[in-house]
Every structure is written in C-alpha cells, then in structure tokens.
Image (cartoon, rainbow, N blue to C red; front, side):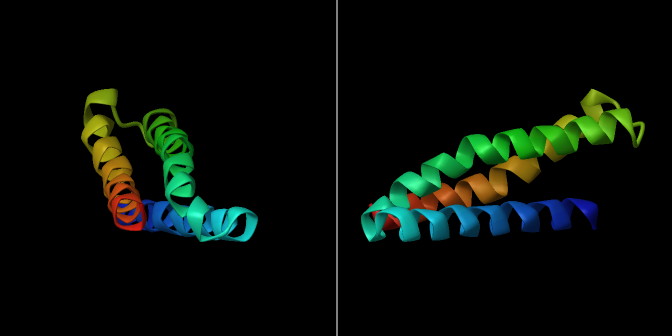
Length: 86
C-alpha cells in the first residue's frame, strides 16, 4: 500500500510540475515541465528508498526493486506526456 501511495505522490508532483509549466510558460512549456519533473522525482524516490533502508530496516537490495518501480511509473507517464505534447 505504501508503494502505491508513493507512486501517487509522484503523479501528483508531475501534475504540479505541468501546472507550474503551464502557468509560467504557457502550453509550449509543458514538454519542458515534464522533463523538469524527472530529476525532482528521482530525488523523491531516492529519499523514499533511504527511509526504507534507514527507518524501516530493509536492505538496499530489498529496496532497489521498489525504488525502480516507484521511480519508473511516474517517469514513464511524464515521458509519454512529453512525447504526446511535443
């Protein structure tokens, strides 16, 4: 359940980036906003992994596949949106 919630947070962050891009640069800025999201979400997913290792007691080997899933789903949505909007 936690993984699904974190993925949801990633999608909300993507929406926030797209909204900020639209407000600051108009429709032409949406593809760039989708790219700006990627490093932000990489950091967010990395923080989630670090919390899993430090606080929840998982090993890095246990958290790595979860990190990939948590990062990849919103990142793929962002890249698909960028492709469609570009």
